[in-house]
Image (cartoon, rainbow, N blue to C red; front, side, top):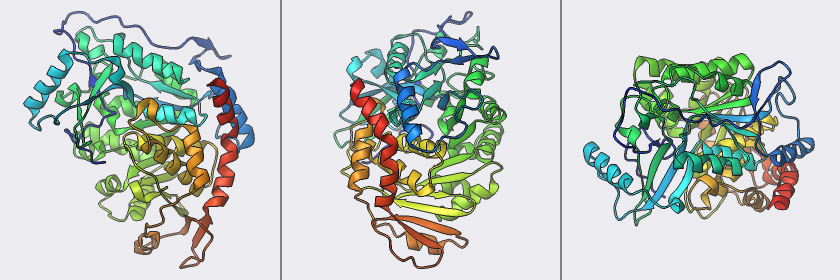
Length: 478
């Protein structure tokens, strides 16, 4: 499906604050801190409580069937995955034509839309909520770290996240008395679909020179605590639309100090950050060098390295990194690649009827996190990630419409791989390729002693038992 992004630096997940009444300065609002009930640790520090014990039970059952995740039971890390920022509400509307490209005309178009708030049936949780939903449905315990306002959109977002068993840790410690009330409202993104199914994205942040939450000058204490109690911190390039670069760099430093793995996906913003302000360039370099896992499309990898071959681009990012363990290249309909220090793994995509690609990358990342936490072989992780991304693509829209576990299991069982991708050409074109593993329908002889073909049936037989307990529990709850 063709996507038309009105602002190349923005994404449907990177929404803007909802339009508000005339800004009033001189006093800051006193929003409610949207934290779930908390309990005390033995050491006295507070930590967020998971909102659904049933999800935790399902996770524990799944773990007993699989390999124990990184850090399980160590250091009080009760959340598997925490996402940083990008909590927004998408308003999805069908329009006769997409907004004009000119900045002022586009801004006026958005203001006309905001003048008549749409019915709630057009609302959907967006941004990093997509990743959290997909990860929770795989049995991971998730928390979202970011700002949610106290207006109707914020209440909607909190209700939806709670229904999915995902906790929210707010960012209201550093309120600014000079900030307008609008600066504290929930991020809102207009997702516009024309008769040809092309998408346009419109948000107030497209017209601001400062981050949406410019009143956040340092990382709040509650966020630091939540990062300390998470096994993975996920951050993407859209966080720069909400927070100052120093806040993002501080969150990465906090994770490293706490022994929390860092996942970073620069997204389309990576290229603009590379050519952005000095602070943006430094923060981008900080994230690229200090993350444990980097996730990029082949185009994004090329833009950051000037290397066209995705395998070599991944190897270049790995070489530049200080802590980088995995570089994952998303190849769209072709599949995906994981590059580590000593190996390259490739997995073709699954054949499906694509309905909507929005949210596929977020869903894919959820499975990469699952594989990382459970020490899965790289080709198994990629197979699962391709299946979760494909399951999302068979539905319409993101948010609560992202991949459900039953659809993921169905795709794994069918194992209908798209083996049109010429992996051998990519591998041969790479000047330095270590051991290479490729997922295939059957075991075949490779073109060199370094190439190993792994039958998909073997991978699926390893993956499916890991989700039986989660699937059974979900069925009982439904």
